[in-house]
Length: 321
Ligand code: BYC
Image 1 (cartoon, rainbow, N blue to C red):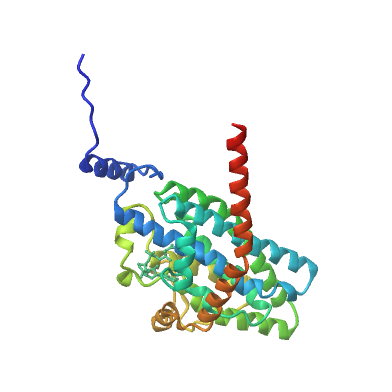
Image 2: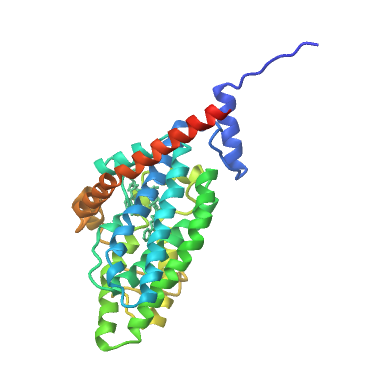
């Protein structure tokens, strides 16, 4: 009997990958994948992970000033969840071959981005409500389709993250509802927060489809399932009725129900502001990165201790083997 060994050629690998994507299957870490698919995933997942941990800062800033013990413990749990989301996502990105240290260095040096939204300040308690309701609300709309992303570790991380985000969105709504039913001053505080967070929340979905260089590949590869503009529209449609329940006005004079399209029509976004924030010139970019680096440096001893402990455990295991 003759056995012929068949080593997969580059063409075989590409066609296996294409067939998996076409069948809506999952690509796993050990599977072959095109370099650009890998690079796109590292960029998006690292950016997503960085957003989770930088996103702890605006709300973390309010932990000591939450208005009751109950609000404080809820906010603490939420901020802690964001750290957990960062960990799942860094772990997912590491399966693609970039170490967590490398990703953090790139975050600190500006070589990788984090979401534009976290460069805005939290000026009052109501901002925590607006973040939960609008920012986490936008995150859910964006992330639910990512639970079906073609890269297995990313899709699986998103399932748990989405469950927690829906609690986050409700806690934000609950903060705003309490304020909206409160004194005139509290109502004004809630309205002011929504006025400031509305447009930046719409920008979270990324540039308009015509100016989104990564969308075509990401959609073809099954990483993104809907375009930036489609998800932005879905978010507006979902949020307007919730604003009505809150009795809060969304700060857009052009916002109206459009019978013909069956969607809410809304005004133009200020994309020059988005570009400015991405360039590093948003209200809080410098502070966010400075605090992140300081936390990283302050935590060096923990990483050193954990590494030394792991080495000791490994040596012990080797000895006893
Ligand atoms: N901010 O070609 P495009 C959370 C960049 S955290 C900054 O459309 P893509 C939470 C984009 O990276 C949840 N940069 O890109 C945490 C690209 O960069 P390059 C955060 C942005 O990837 C704590 C360029 O612009 N969610 O919920 O196809 C507390 C061109 O864009 C932004 C995620 O990270 C932005 N907003 O689509 C509370 C979701 N938008 O190529 C809450 C995961 C675009 O120039 N990410 N850019 O380096 C995604 O779904 C996609 O990456 C995006 C962009 C839809 C954001």
